[in-house]
Amino acid sequence: DAAQLWELRRSHPLCAALANAISKESTGVKNVDILEEAQRVTIGLGGGQATFCKSGKDRTAMGVTLQQSRILGEGHGCGTSPQRILRDANTMRATGTRIEVANKNIGYYKYSFNPLQVSFMPEMYRPPPQTVQDFTTSMIKRDS
Image (cartoon, rainbow, N blue to C red; front, top):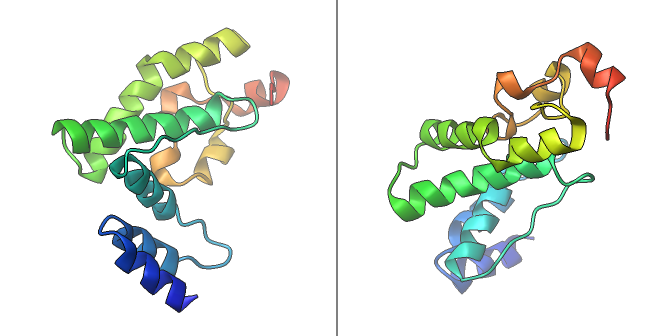
């Protein structure tokens, strides 16, 4: 409720943006800003984070590479604009260790998403087009 959000804003300077993201939450619409701000607070307070999906590769890869890109931009001065963060995340998604994990799991360098699934994902969590399966492959070689 409003009183709890006010307390969150006052509790620590890092929490103000998180409280604002929570206050914008609405039914039926995913507010991924909450995830971003929770990660920022956790890292800022010296905490750790774990990201998991059912099989531990596809959705996890999107979340982890996005977080790594934000840390790269904010912590090492590589740029913090959404365009830069997405570009760096997509470079990691297409050429980094996460696509290697996908290859070890399914035998080729594609994430287990098809174009329809990708169209429903928040922009910052979408894999690069060259790493997305086509519709037929995603149905025939379904792994999760």
